[in-house]
Length: 99
Image (tube, rainbow, N blue to C red; front, side, top):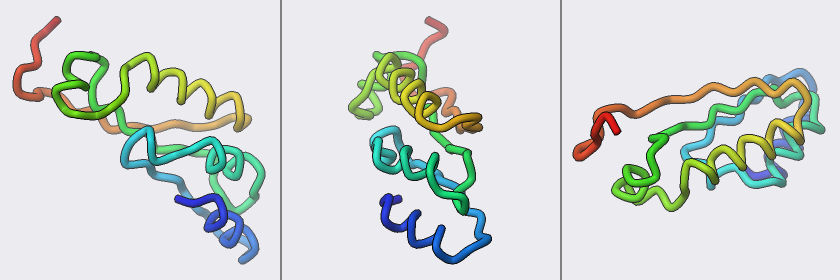
């Protein structure tokens, strides 16, 4: 979601806007900053976690590592006080092992 869309929602008054990301790349620092500075936007981020394994993330062509995911999450938490985070976890990707 673009930061200007969030600002526009904020101008409507009492509206609850929840940011749901399809991937970690979908939410940039501008969006996170806007979440923290607008009253209409919930201090909540739905941030999907496809895998904690860099090997599986590469097989899924996700374009980021587990470390990068954690860095982006830490940045969001640092930018938004009391940020609530939810996620979806994909399990059982073909080729995935217990390791």
